[in-house]
Length: 251
Image (cartoon, rainbow, N blue to C red):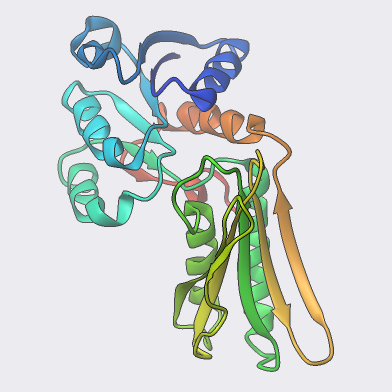
């Protein structure tokens, strides 16, 4: 399979390594300093482009790839809600193909399935309140994380007593805490911590007077995210439309 990379930071370089190890060819690498490469024959020859860039650049990158008939796997977050209707139109009405997920880790996909299943169980036990905590490295600017938001939305879909989510506290790299833990009962709170070089930790905590139940996914490094993105590209090459993790993994 021929792959184009859009974004060549730490994640892009790891995706490149894993893709080559799996027998794929990297035909084009586009970063902030060579945007003209979108117009190259090499880019247009790609079966799939894998896009990991900044939120403000993601949608434009995807549209440019679509204009050359290239399918896209995108792991950029914090942009999809603003452009959701446009993306749905491009994929459902104009025949473009995008695989988008807030997290490509196989472990997170499994964790997500456990989160949904546990929420269904806890729907019958109103004595447990629930909140979420996510921890990432100090270079991550957005909070909550895209994965944190996805987990929250999946939980809300399966737990009747929670209707929406809200930003809770933010613990900054210097240890200062802003925000609040005070929410109304129907709101799911998401607390964020920015510390060191943490790849990503997500916890769902159910708490009652008697006890608490916690499920956690703790990424050791970025390798799981990069492998998942390459697996998604392999899947996308054989499928069309607006795709996501639940299309690839039937949990």
